[in-house]
Every structure is written in structure tokens, then in C-alpha cells.
Length: 414
Image 1 (cartoon, helix red, strand yellow):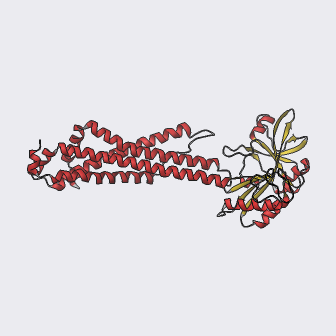
Image 2 (cartoon, rainbow, N blue to C red):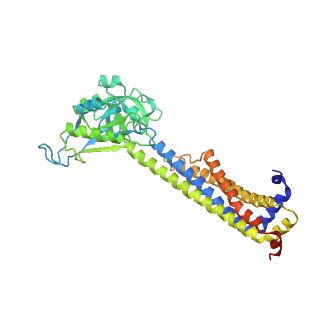
Image 3 (tube, rainbow, N blue to C red):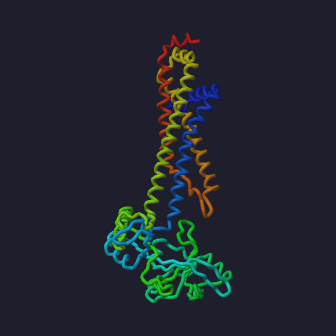
């Protein structure tokens, strides 16, 4: 290892690099660009993944939403175009038949209504819900609480409103809890205020009231507008969706092949597609980055081959003066490793700076594009190690070429 601390060794490397400044600079940039691209693309992919997790963060991601539409096929005496509603019988059947698969089931009813407080008013969505909704999508409460089971049991006239509704209907710094608002001419006591989600928000500004209260006020009887179903961990949400739809079609005498009778959105399926896209992007990133690294390393090999050719006479003199083949090989390999190491370190530094700038420019605010675009240190070290190993291996080629020429022939080289 003494040669690593030998000043003559590094003077020779410096002299070789100085003699071919432009060529060496272009080579370093080529290698630098490879690891730079790898770091930036991996960081951007991580930022996108973090953003998707943020968007779906409040939701139970293995969920499916179901509602009814018009039938598209005649069946058992019913004409095409028939309308029908989900009912509590459907809920009971699903909870019984899929007790092992279903974790949460939230039946929902919704309408539009005018919300009034004193002389202030606004038109908002009104939703009849069960407390389980807060488990499917957690509400970020500013004041008070969400609906509870006592509200359902007692048909309580209570409501949970959004922050925007609170700002529109109440005076600044006025405490809303315990006060009353009128929704569609019925008085409700405000028991909670929630902050709208900055991720997926399927409801927008909504006043939540107990499902049983909604039934009585709007005379919906056993009708259910739509339902949100969350599967237990490990359950195939796609297959569960198919099975549930087939069960509902059987209950409502809908043709098994009717694709339009029910509408559904499978959140788990959508997330799987996004995760598949991210996996493909990461694979492409590694492929492009490593290919660029290899191209840069080969460029170093070519530069060293040219350098060896130009230094043939010098190498011959060194051989004639007693320099061993191993010392010459070591010198050229060390130059290759030095160039790849410098290029790799610069690429990592510049890549980190770009990710830092991306985080500042598009990683903040309520609707960021990338969230915390970073690369794990072990991954960076793996890429750097690959680069140094390749630099060492590629340096062996010109090193071998430098030692195969006999000293007498090298001295004749013009």
C-alpha cells in the first residue's frame, strides 16, 4: 500500500491528467453524468412514491366504493334501463356472507342543502353517516368530535362541519361547539369541525349528520345511496369486489354480465397500478443510470489506452531502468480508480444539490409534486462502489497493454 502515499505516484497521475486536460475533463463529465442521472431519477421516483402515499394517506387503501346505476340488460322480466337502490338488506347480506373478508362497511346517504347560522348561509353537501366513516378516512378535527354511536342510536340532531363552513358561517375566533346551525330548516348542534383533507377528498365541504337522523329528516327509509367497503389485510380486494357485485346483482335481479348496473371504484386497484408504474420507473432509472455509468467507465478506459499509447516510449525507459510490470500496471489502474472516484463523488454531490432544489421548488405547499425526494445512503454507496469496481476493472486493460510491449521495442517507438 506504500505506493498510495508515494508522492511520485501522484505526480505522475497529475502530469498525465494535466497533459490531457480536455480529454480527461470530458471523460469525468461522462462518468459524473451517469451517477448524477441515477441519483436524480431515483430521488424523483422516491418523491413521487412519497407523494402518492401522502395522497392516499388518510384512506384505508384496500377499499372499494359501490353505488347503483341503470341496468343495461333485460333480466327476469325487467326491462333495460331500470333504476334501483341499495338497501339495508344488502348491507346485512354482505356483512354476513363476507364477514371474514370485510373489515369496515360504511353505508352513506347524501344530498345538497342550505346551511344557515343567524344571517349567514351557504349551500353545501349534507351526508348521513355512521361513525365507521372516520375509520375509513380519518378526519382531522380542529374542534370537538366526530359522530358517535349514541348519535346514531338516539337519532340526534348533531352535525360535524368543515373548516371552510365554520369560517363562512361563524365570526372569527367564535367557538362553534355547542352552537346551532339550520340545515334544510332543521336545527343541528355543532359537535365538531374538521380540516379538509389535502389528500384524496371525496366529499369536499360536507356537513356530516347521523345516518339515522338523515333517514328521518329526508324520509329515505332503508335506501342507501352508496357504500364504502374496506377489506381485511391479505384479502384480494379485486376478487372481493367481483364477488360482492355478483351477490348484489343476484339480490336485485340484475343480469350477471351487466357492466353498467353498478358503479364502483377500487382504490386498492388504483394504488396497485400506481405502485406498478413506480416500480417500472425505478427499474428504468437503474437501467439508464448503470448503462450511462458503464459508458462513462469505458470512456475512461479509452482515454487511458490513448495515454498509454502516447507514453509508450516513457514506459519503455521506465522498464529499462528496472520498473516492474506490476508497478506500471498499478500506476495506470490507480489513475483509472482516481478518475472514477472523483467523477462519482462529484456526480453524487451535484445530484444531491438538484434533489435539494427540487424539494424547495416543488416539494412544499398544499399540493406538492414531489415529497421528500431523497435517495437512501446504502443505494448511493452501492452505485458508487459499482462505479469504482468498474473503474478498477477497466483500468486493467490499458495496464496490461502497457506491460506487453518489450522495453527495446518501446524505446524505438516514435
